[in-house]
Length: 94
Image 1 (cartoon, rainbow, N blue to C red):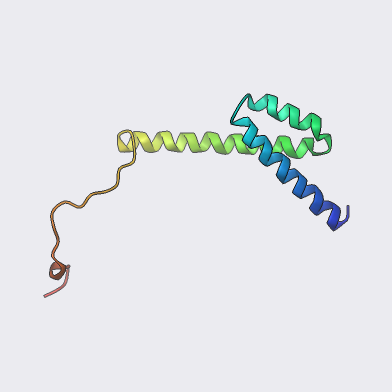
Image 2: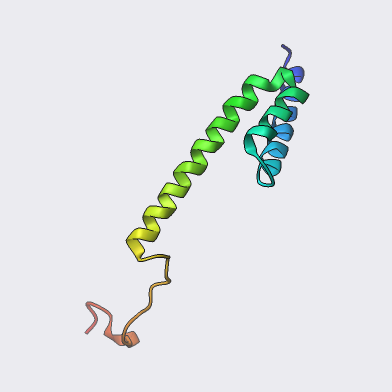
């Protein structure tokens, strides 16, 4: 395959995959993947691999988020400073 043909295919794959991911948010992900594969059979293998990778990444992100919520008591909070620190009272200043 020539570089131009490869670039065109990669660009088309990126566009189709991006649309697949957007559409998957609004319906059955597996059905959306099946539709994309039917419409673009030459991209089927790559679409399936990318889709599986994206699903794994989403699962890991959810697990990490769940772990973070558990460790922080249900959410992330912005740290607060307790007390006041005068500008001249920095460690090591005399």
